[in-house]
Each structure stands twice: as C-alpha cells, then as structure tokens.
Length: 336
Image 1: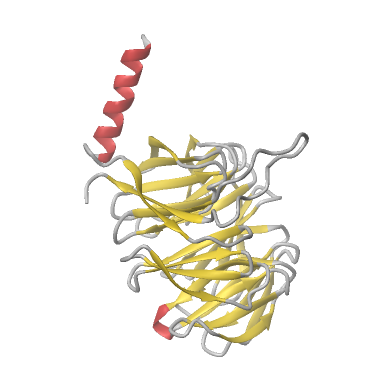
Image 2: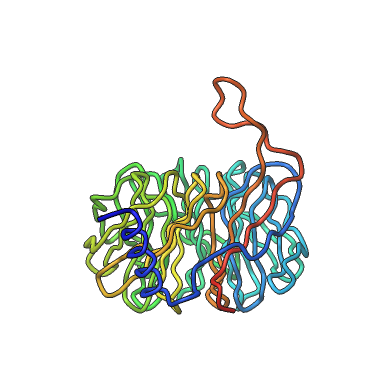
C-alpha cells in the first residue's frame, strides 16, 4: 500500500467517525498574561465560565466573550478548582499551604481554608453528598470536605500518589489514578473508603482521567503514550490507543462520544468511543507544553493553557517563559 492510499484511508476514517467537517482546529486565542506556571482548567458550562490556575491565583474567563473577567487570589501553589454551582461554592487546592480554599463563586472571594494532606493537587465535587474531595500527592490520601461548611469530613488513605479523578454519582463512586502504582482506585462515597484497586495494564503511570457516565467508561491518559478505556464497574481494560508524549489531562464529550488526551509534546489525540472499541480519529496539533485541558460539553470546545518560552540554554530542558505570554487556546469542530 502506498503512502497516498494510506493517507486517504486515514482521512476516510476521520470522516466516517466524526462526520465530514467536524475536525477540530484553532478557534480562538485568549490572552491572559502574567508570570508563572499553570495546571488544571475547569469549565462551568451553564455559567459560561472557565477557571484557569495560574501561578498563585485562578483566572476566570467569560466563555461567551473569550475574555478575562476576574481572579481568585490568596491561593499559593494553586493546582485547580472544583465547582459546586448549586451551592455557589468552589474549592481551590493550595499545594504550598497543604490547604484547600473555599470560594464564593459570585464574589470570587476566599471564605475559609481547610487543612488537607500534604500537597493537595487533584480535586472534584461529589454532588450526591455535596462534598469536595482533594487528592493529596505527597500525603497519598484524599481529604473529604463538606461543601456547605468547609469542614473536613474524612481522610482516606490511598496507598499511592494520586492524580486526576472522576465521580460517578449514580454508583456512589469516586475514581482516582495512583500514578506510581499503575492502579485505578474506586472509593465508596457513603463509606469514604477504597473499595477496589484495579491494575491498568497495558497502561502505565496514568495522569489524566475522564468519565462517560452513560456507558460506564473511564478514559485514562498514561505516561507510556497510551490512552486506555476502562469499565468503571469491573475495572477491566477494554481498549487502548496510542497518544503523544507527556500526557496530563483527558476529557470526554458525551454528545459526540469523543475522548481527548492532551500531551506536552503539542498534540491532542481525539478518539471515538463505540461500544467497547476506541479508535483514533484525529491528532490535533496544538503547542508544545499545552498539556492541561478541559472541555465544554455544551459547545464541544476544548481549552488548553499555553505560553511562549525562550530557547533553552545548553543542558536545560526548557527556556524561560516569555513575559506576559500566558494564554488559553480554544479548539473546536468546524461545524458551529
């Protein structure tokens, strides 16, 4: 088979699975500016807001205007924010303080701070019991916090370094990747205890996680350049596809059945889920270092944080960040 034939078949596969004209491409660049690194992005599809961790604060962007409209400050070592819109509350993980900050989503003011395990990183909101979870990297634990009062409810030992997380409200389960154990854990929300530990082979060192609630599938972005699809009821690995290098985040769009894996090498792998099958339909070129991502299920857009960097000096992995170059990249399908 010659190269032209292979390319044609690949293009036909994308058209077949995504629909003609649905390929993702750059729609908008939102300038943010300022110094410092970044981590999680979180979208509120109903409230039309995007929350982006940046240095020691969370930048708030209006997704209807693609413009910065506010900041949440006093959050040293911020990793990201979980949202409880019905309570008008958010919870920011402050890694340098070993604390989590309870935030008023209207005023963007910190209401109180709560002690967590060492280095709180990942976070989520579990609406069934109205509780926030923080996943503490060095503490190898999860801290459960009452979303109304900001008080600690429980501390759950995990036995490994936690990464991204997801919640299944109907099943009463919270899932988390243990990056250093090559495991996926399932926590029973009613008991605040780990119920299952599942190996993720052939995946290794999973970071990102996304959840398909309807089909009970978890999508894990793994450090060995692979995205695996896991049955969330049994822990069985159903399928896997190759992805780029340096994966950090995953997303799943229930409207299109597309799963996304964003990688530091400047690519986002987009795969179509069909039953127990997973098929790559597009490798989207982004920017090197744009490894974190979130998806707005209402618009099908994905958002990635990025910045420009100077050429690295000899022996250095990365050069210095160009001042005020921090931005958010917005990608979406051709069809509006």
